[in-house]
Amino acid sequence: MRAQELLTLIKEAGIETIAGVPDSTLKQFCDALQQEKSFKHHTTVNEGAAVAMAVGSYLATAKPACVYMQNSGIGNAVNPLTSLANKDVYGIPMLFIVGWRGEPGVKDEPQHVFQGKITCECFDLLAIPYEVIDCNTTVEDMTSIIDKAKDAFAQDLQFAIIVKSGTFEKDKAFTWDNGQALNREEALGKLLEVLPQEVRIVSTTGKISRELYEQSNRLYGGHDNLFMSVGGMGHASMIALGMAASRPDKTIVCVEGDGAALMHMGNMALVASEKPENMYHIIINNQAHESVGAMPTDCQQISFAEVAKSLGYQEARRIETLEEIESIGKDIQTKKGPLFYEIMVGLGSRADLCRPKESAKENKEVFMKKF
Image 1: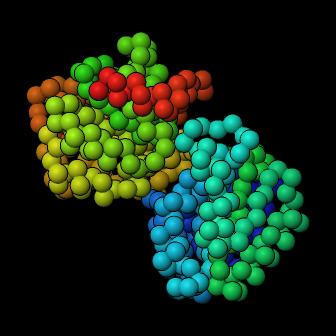
Image 2: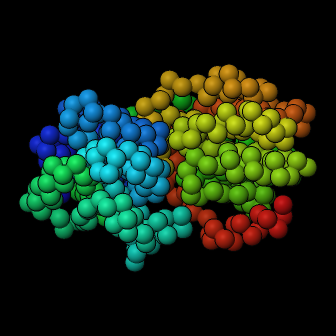
Image 3: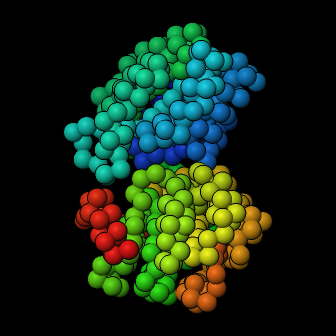
């Protein structure tokens, strides 16, 4: 089935608003959505925000909205689902399109394994009826499923469509360019070169951690000082703050992406408020969710450096060249934190970019032993 065919059925169900967070399993769906102009489409900062937008859309139009996400985002969606949308509260109908990462029996990355096991059970617990679709699902099957969704809407219920990997045919990809020239992997390599080797680095989920892993191995033959938070998108800065507050004798550097920072942007306010002198915060900004298909964040106009300044970081700067990255190493050795750097980079990564060979637990144990 083509993703466009699903979008057509969603439109015929009376849905006009679609909001969500991109997912690699839903890449064809997201690509088609970016090229389909008949919907009011919102790329939200997190999945809970998408649910809240769907609530607002329904209150304003009496028409259900559609929310899309990776199954890892169910956690972010639970609060507005249970305290707002549920039939026992306001009874707000909406359609969910959920990419199933970590499906049992399908090899996937470690952060998806447990969530994959409990995905269907989550919807059972939330009392949301659902159907699972895969590459064998036909348009006729999908039409029947959408009819079930409409029946649920009529009862003020939500309905979920859980999408297995490989469900949609490959189609015309959506592409765009953010206009930035600096290569992210080169920028991260330069950052590792200029940082004192005794610092402890917390990196966000996605390609940033994978590139730091490769560059650290290339430069130093290992990555003992790198904690790759391969799950928990948006929480790397709080992991770093927890380390910095607990061990003021250690220098902590947080490296996260713009999409992750947007997901829990209040974290920046807490870092600025707590003023950890040993913490340095770096956002690698390519204005996209690149690790899951490179869909724009829809917040391209945001200057994280200006936000950090307004929140009270000691200093905040925007960086666009490799030469400017050199100053970060000097700052960390001579200035007290929290300091903030926004490094602007282009899109794209190597096709042969590897994934960590060690398990998540092995990464944790080595990092803690060297801490």
